Image 1 (cartoon, rainbow, N blue to C red):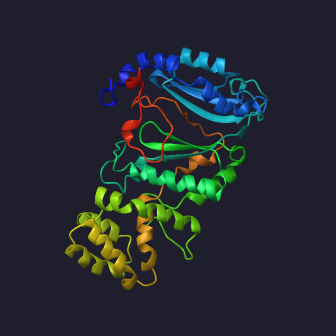
Image 2: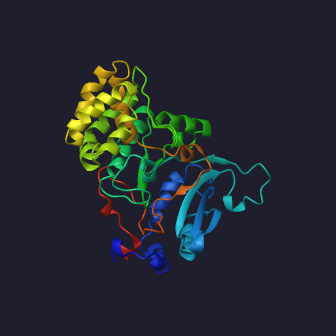
Image 3: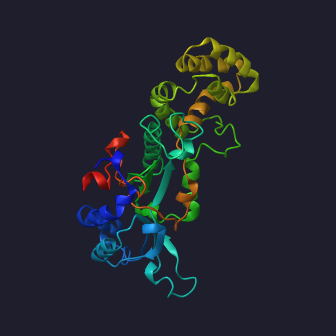
Length: 347
């Protein structure tokens, strides 16, 4: 059975085999136990299980690997989420004194979902993805991984396919796990460039001097921009596409650029005309406008709420996505969607 023929109705038959034959309990436990240096670190970790018919079970905890393995093979969860390390065992949260059950540590996590790019990708929308728009995830990983390592000094970064339409990052350094909510928010805000909801047209505004982090991010985007945006997405193909880009340009320059776009034949030609003429048409704002457009179309879009909450649960690596049958597997920076295996294809 391959990915294209996967039937979600077959999951109840496949999951018991997956949890008996394939789930890497030893490696999974070693990761979340962090060498057992801190007593009760693993036993105080929250897990949640989503079972058949969307039954959601929170505050699961296990004393050791054997307990975890036994419960997973008993419950056969459709989805596994990992939460914080608490002051007490999560399974005992109802029996501890009120106010004393507190989330103390958790990996710093990031969630990037392709649906957040729906306003700038033309090939797909909603939950649909393809190799063309998946380039956005490659760009996101390259930008964020460099920043987490070079700007913040985090050594242990685990990138995982989300199972359907995005990627997750788990920053596992001890210093990252001990960050407060305010500190997590500060890291997430530092990495957030595209700002504003659906009603905000221009979502990137650069200020001189451009921050070194943004300069390095632009360098990454420039490596992919022609192949991804100009050729793959053809984002200046026709008039509706032009108008969307021109809405980001100062009004005084729009008429001239529209005239240039009408004479050009391809997205590549139109982009070159925009880069060449904008600084002349608007010397004050035009210099950085092409960079702002590239950032708006290609810069990673983070779910800040996922990153800032210490007690926020995130889908676990090696969990199966119930709708696709795909496993949350480790990400190689450059890849194509078809390499991710499913429970159906390996059993």
